[in-house]
Length: 409
Image (cartoon, rainbow, N blue to C red):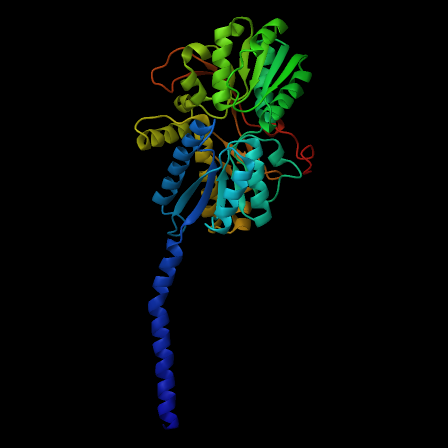
C-alpha cells in the first residue's frame, strides 16, 4: 500500500467515523431527553393515615402531569414512584434507600408522620439527595436534623399551634387540657400551644398522651369533664382524630368544652360525619373552599375535579401537589436535576401554586405560608363542603422559630 493510498484510507476512516457519530448524535440526545426525572414518593398507603396518603398520591400525580404537559425539562418527562412506608420509620428508611440506590430517583417528596420524615431525611442527607417533606415537624428544620438537601413544604407545629392557639385563647377561654398522640407530632403541637398560651395567660389543666391507633378514648371523657376545661386541644391525626371526636360527642364532652384540633382534617371530618364534628374548630394548611377568593386554589381544584370525577382535594392532598410541583418547578428554573443546582433555586423561591403566596426561607428551607382557621359545619352542598373559614392568618416569618432558635443561625 502506497503512502498516498494510506492517507486516503485514513481520511475516509475519519470521515466514516464522523458520519457515524453524527448519525448517532440525535439518537444520543433523544435518549438523554427521554430519561425520566424520577421522584420518589414514600407515604403510608396502609395504616391509620391511609386516606390522607391516598389523596397525597392523587394530587402529586396532577403535579407530574402538569409538568409533562408543559414540555418537562428539555423534553425530559417526570414520573412518580410511590412506595408504602407503612407509617414506620424503619420501613421508610428502607424504601428511601431503595428509591435512591435501586430506582435512581432524582428527588424524594413525601411522608406523613414526624418520625417517618426524619428517618427519610437521614437517608437523603447521607446520600446527597434533595428531600421535600410534606408532613408537619419542627425538628426537621432544626439542628441536627436539617441539612442543605432538606426542604419542608408542610407547616411546622410551632406556626400551626401558634396561629390556632392565638385564635382559640382569645375567643374560647384560657383553661385548657391537651390530648396528644404520643410521638413527635403530638409533643410538638403541645409545645406550640404552650408557647403561645404562656403569652396569653392560659391555664394548663392536664396533658394526656395516647398511642397512635387508639380505638377507645371513652375512659378519658369523665376525667376531661371533671377538669371543666374551656378548651380540649386535640393533638392527634387521621383515624384517631375521627374516633376521639365521635366519642367526645357521644359522651357529652362537646357540650361543656370546645374541641380544637391544630390540624382539623377534611378526610376525618367526612368519615366522622357532620353531627359528631359540628362546632369543632381547628387549623389547616388548605381548604378547597378558598377558591372563591384565591385564583390558584380555583385552578388547582378544577384540575383535581377533572382528574378525579368531580372530587375535591383534601388539605394533605394539596401538600402532595405543592411539594412535587415545587421541586419540578425549581428543576425547570435550574435547567437541571443536579441536587446542588435545584436546591439553590428552591431556597428562597417564591411561588403560588394553590393557596396564595408562599416562599422558602433561605436559612432553613421552611415554606412560609398562610394558616386557615376553620370550623366544622353541619351540612354542605357536596361531600367535601364541610368547613367554614373563620380567619386567614397570612404567612410571615415571625410565625416561625428563628433560625438561631433552630440552631441554624
